[in-house]
Length: 508
Image (cartoon, rainbow, N blue to C red; front, side, top):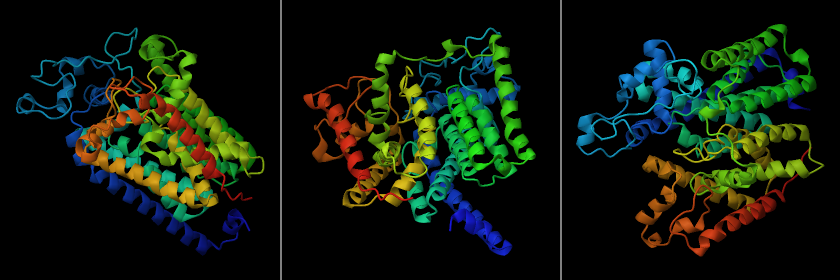
């Protein structure tokens, strides 16, 4: 008997008890995640001070929203409002040991230049998406930068909860759901960005939440009007977080339409359709109106962003997003090889059930992955690893959960232990010294590799950077091993992926 049939045959009292247990479990998962992330927030604030890269510009926009009730940041840059979250002149002269971005008083570089759009309208308007600044504005009003960091902790905990729920919905096994939560939710890139003011984290939450609701509809399950309204808000704000996410919003929308056709549109009432579509229309009209306000056209100015590279260099981005020693996903969280290999397995195996679900998952992930790989700055510049992949990697909880229920063998168990330990050690290293997670597009090796050489006696002078590939820039000094490393890691990944899924127990 299917799970859906069992649920339909439950008595009202049993159904109520099940719902209460489900709510308690969700509260436990969310609370545990939030406590875990928040535990390290004061340390992260101390080490990652002041906010750098794009972070101060999201905060400055939030200040303009809060203090001036407008989007023109001329006043903020005239009064140097960033000093609210920057060190003082006294702190700097006393021997400042934090980051040294422009704008610090008494540093000789006391001016922070705006990252503004080339708008036709007079004033200074940020080139970044407004969505994140509106999200963090209330938290900034309550607790300045620390308040925003706790808000990002809460978003990370909610994302971790959705990873747990997607894993459970795919397998109905809590053990696997907890395992996926631990492996994906508490390692890079989610852990790294749980403390940073970047739009990728809320985007990841929106993507996985919309995907979960569409998947439930495809199964014929009913989705409440509240959840449909939340999904509609997520659809609507994704482009506001970053213009690239318009693609994700469109792909998820197509999946939702297909799910309604497959699962039956009767599972949504008229009010449900209104709850879903009204936020989408509201944010969509505002989106176009904002561009009309800034540029006089319904489209953004492409000159505001880095644009895209020559298609001939696309393989560099495709490989670099996974294997680069500073920014590659698999270099910092090799456990993601399991769901990636399982996706390939499901795509090419004709006798696996419910293939449409995985075709849709690939249809959402692959176009975005290719788009980001062709981006001129696919690595994200000054940031922790896998920044641009973060919006889609939580979706890999689905193939990971199903892989855990189907795979077996000593190699599989050994890989889980080794990859989980690898990721956990990197998380510990980022906690001990959060600055190890930040990299720049220079010729210096990954900071984590340098840190290992400096602190572990038998690794001194080994040149660990030569054992890991770099796709952003040439690492110096380089040895012959450096030129071999890209082929070694790619070959090892392909071999491991093939061997891991070879033991699959196919289930109908």
